[in-house]
Length: 489
Image 1 (tube, rainbow, N blue to C red):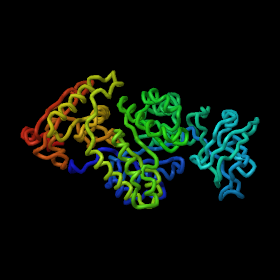
Image 2 (cartoon, rainbow, N blue to C red):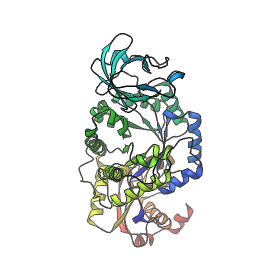
Image 3 (cartoon, one colour):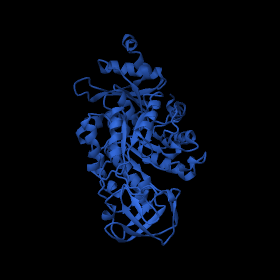
Image 4 (cartoon, rainbow, N blue to C red):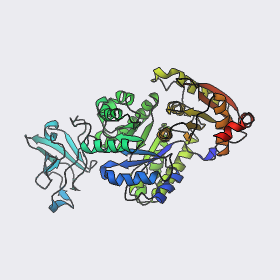
């Protein structure tokens, strides 16, 4: 592993059961994929199991993220007569009702939320299929809304429905979400990304299931509407991280506001010491074309400049014609963009006040690496993944090599910027860890004899807090290796 060729920004790639063979996913992993996303909206538990089984044949380091539907509203399926699409003309009157059981037809469109009519007021705008159809609510009765179509389109069934600026009283979880979360826990999955998180209550609905099962499953809250943006502090306080899902966010909120909101949310996540994923249509044209547009390349680069931990591919890898090219392109953009980044200022991790010792250690290490310009890497050990995340948060230009004592922590850190993980075995002292880790990483081509590294480790007491720092050239550190200790592990 050559330090100069590594990307630090992590890549999440969506994989479908249609194309999830080991050879295919192996090629994506080698091209730079770090986390596999499974979109439950389009799959079953049985088809998802095939993806998981194949991922685990490739590497124990690949994180797996299960994306739930959450409190999402969609139109119901069309009757057979209109299964290929219902033509709607601008100026046409369209009725909308709420029923999970009824099929839509030319007389009325149904959505899968029974209280839809009660929740939506006259004057609201309804956007269907990511805004391809815009309806204006002109009247309402007990059973349906009367709307006026604002444009021409052909509408098929089971399409997304958004009502900007209107708060819906949808439950946080549906039956399929609960089934998938339980399956994720049983199968030792790493992350669950819950859709349309609006507030702390939505977060806790998922966390209650996770906590009851005493699972290490980590919750990523997807921010997709104004309510989620408004409540981002309480959402971050109770989540492992966030995903800025710009698809529905761009439908719910004016398009010109999205870049500013994205920047704000990425910065907020950093201040809470939580990973942030930027998602949706990052290289969208590569679904059908072998090259992205210049605007898409700039979009990916801007997410990296804003210090996102991870960037995500959706249709590009799930069903696109050029999945390997898309991952490779994203990797190339990341490597080039990261050349222009500088370490963050030292005051950004201000929220984790209860962990000030670890944050101070991370801050001090990054300061040292900036002052000693030839510092090539940080080396640390971790039981929980917490300290490597803090180091990651300061965005040093040096990679972070984390030797982790638990397999699932290695996968959890697959979402953290600049962190590269390896399994570790417990040693008896900081000195033993320092010497062993240095040689292990040298032997695995992560560092060379001439590199200067910063080693940070726990104190080998009950609390295990990171309080030890050592700086030195690899050759000098290796001269002190206890050969018997190294070869016995």
